[in-house]
Length: 255
Image (cartoon, rainbow, N blue to C red; front, side, top):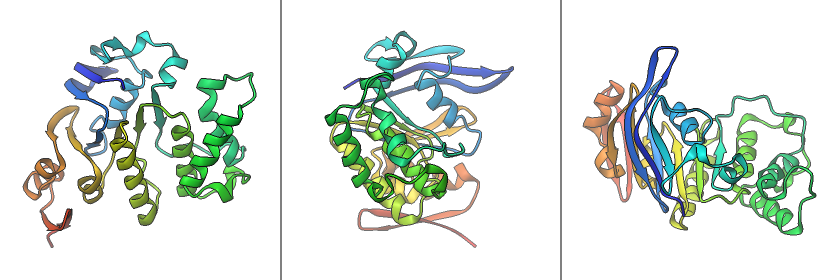
């Protein structure tokens, strides 16, 4: 399983510093949640990790090898990506979109193999999408299409899964089911790196939390040490209290 390391990473766009001097290290078996206000640099950080952007300074390595030294197909066998659901769904069926996750293994010009079809079917069933397999994506709700994007990433069967606000657009039940699934994937040995805005769910399921503020790491650690009322009250500039019930922690704003 690859070890992901960020060394003194900085990124500047049009003279504006987006990320500054980030040093982070992630390993297999972790479910890491990046949290921060809009504009904190979360999406930019993910795009740098994916090799879609180049750092202005510092670097990102997978097992000591720079991300940009990998070919795109090789990288797609290591990193799978679920973007924010802001795109217009293409006029393809659910099954066709999900099957695209196998392209790093089959290539564009080869027909899918029985084992690839089996993986697609298993993931569709796991995410409750099997009944929608032949539906055009243009007919789906935003939450349904978000699950399609997740399924496409899961069928890549990569050791690292990168998700940008995967809970956005999902109803509460699917948010919980997704976090349970991601937690299970982490326990099975994958590295899950995601952005999120739901401290209750992050506390319950994540293994690590990174708080980003104006392009810097404000704090990082386990959920029980990072996600507590005093720190988050300052972080979000609201008055919060937390309440522990069993292994869960719930946050409430004071009136």
